[in-house]
Length: 293
Image 1 (tube, helix red, strand yellow):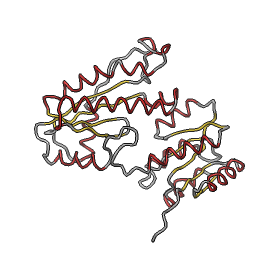
Image 2 (tube, one colour):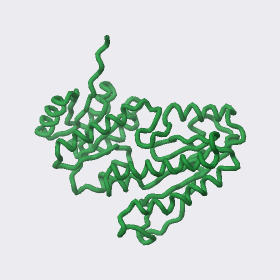
Image 3 (cartoon, helix red, strand yellow):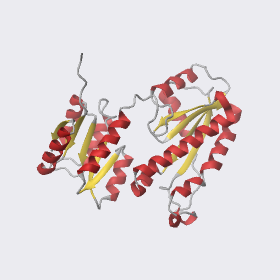
Image 4 (cartoon, rainbow, N blue to C red):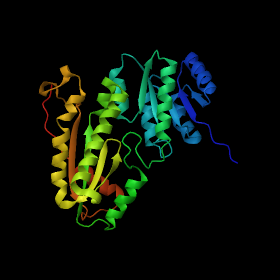
């Protein structure tokens, strides 16, 4: 019998005391721990060792964490490795920038080791998913969605339309109100969208993830526009109620607020391949108007 590989964590940190503490603590919890203090080494090390998670300090002596993150996301073998940023408490713009780059979580220094352990455990449980269902929304994602879209290109759903609904502002919302609250927003929004599709199109409807914040729907072509109108009617106002009472309303709107964008294209559209389909579908989305602060 082949032994199951331990979850491996790569710690990228130049503070020797923090490295020693994290190495001892995570090893005691049953993780395999790799360490490096230099950003230049991270991409190659991650590509070779394939860690399950990278804990990455933003402020490194040679290459900053943003550049390291960009290199990881550009690498074929490292683009999907989850990254947790270590930041200073005052560095809110850094945290937002990290979230925009696809960092899955962050923790501020000085940090509580127990909180870090819980965050690491949550991330690893999410990424342990086979990709069949999104761990937050329980809707299909990954290969299952790609297979359906390939079938659409092959003519499996004539007379239908592809619709995309994107929820923007989740990263900023999570940064402001916490990851649990952000996941609740995504979960409730996804349930509302999926139920709307089922209510309007019945068994003919499909709803799954195109990416983390975008759902793709397949419905009869004549129902696509009414369905998107229904979704906006149900969610546009509802999204405001996720905010505290003093942070709601027209005067609070900005481009970072929770908001939907949507659009649809017929399945008869000519596509050169799967990526072309996704690009055309995303390009069909339009955003609602908003009032800047």
